[in-house]
Length: 402
Image (cartoon, rainbow, N blue to C red; front, top):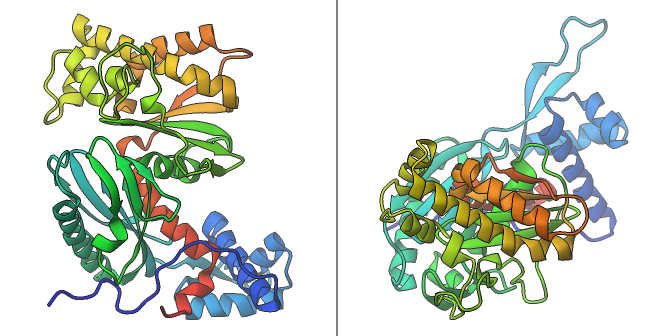
């Protein structure tokens, strides 16, 4: 018999806290935990100074967080100073962890991230998922999740929730994949297929990639357009630090913006979509490479050696990206465009033509285009960190039982 994923502990999802005395206490617990997570190690006095509560109030809140295993005492903060030193507090490396999973066209991956933001366990399966029925794919994903959970538990962690990134449109219910053209999935309820003891939150991979960039990126502004370029191309819009999802939750389908309306047929049913010119498989085909193994690495090597076919394929892909991004930049006026995903590693050869198209076609000053250091890891890390952030936003939930 397979062991349950989390032995009755609750999943963690973000929710608004009530404006009551209990709600205020929960918000203050979150403020303390966020302060230590963002700036720690900190003493109780330092926390009180940062969040504007009394030392007595902070001490009570800290004691609760230590008792729940979310904070840990590290010993005297400054042993050489005059007077009694305060005890330094840090986010615990044990306790709740975020489980992130990704269903890719050519892979499945799962990781566990602790409250410190460190990846503590990981599992990957490479293999084509395009055209496969959802059930066997999700069964394989479940096996990876169980493997990662077991590895994390040996590290003293337990799963606070599961978040799954998929390359497709996800309904606002947070678990139904409405349409994933590169997988050929339609109306797939992943919650019904994944284990009931750890119900998932499902979202588009570009959204999770953008959140990872927001939380983990290097000086990423609060307003940006994140382009996630893999076999398909997705995008996510972040405004004032929040995802812009649209009425149905489908905002960001940049890959299906037509670049050449009379171009080749796309898996979505349209013609001339951006994916047909700048998606990973399209670029590899244009460069004369088969989309298998480390073909993107081979393409980068050839481009670095001034191979004419590789350079031309990447220049054309950058031009197509620039054309598609022009409308989004003119419409939304983001502070920056961030290029992530597998094609981020090809940025040196993509960016010149991409930037030229944007400069020629957009109004106002040129929009900066940067490259994510997270690369193809963004969606998986964003999924796991979304669970971690939910714990930080409402740490009292770790004491509740579903």
